[in-house]
Length: 175
Image: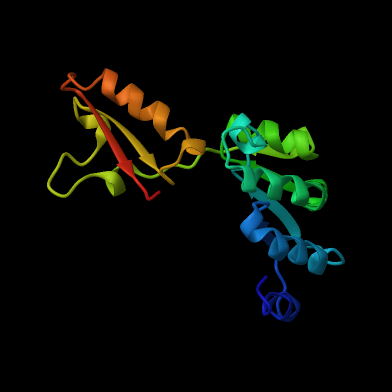
């Protein structure tokens, strides 16, 4: 919880506030929605939340499954309020859009907009400037290197294509 958030929201007028429903930002997001509830400020939920067996607890250590069960009721209620009060929802994937609907977002308010980066940002120095001008097909993963992100599946796929000269897998992240 960011103590200055309430003061910042109260001092300024905003046309739009973009919030995240993920656990690390849940308190701030809920506070922001409450602060702007009586104004004309639009609220957009920008989410990468998904519902998968791993998220539901399969494969997690016992202490994480217990903590999830204890907090599930409160977290689910707060997230549901955020999705229901939002003027729009931006989901990073079709899976995130489905999860948003399951939590309570109105389907007509959801836009699926995957994260993207201009190819020139991803080019290596002194390499071909754009992937599309190259004969090499590059697969880039940027994120937390963990099972819940599906990195293990991508690594298995990369191993299958290891002998191919025109396919390159790039992994960037930590974990």
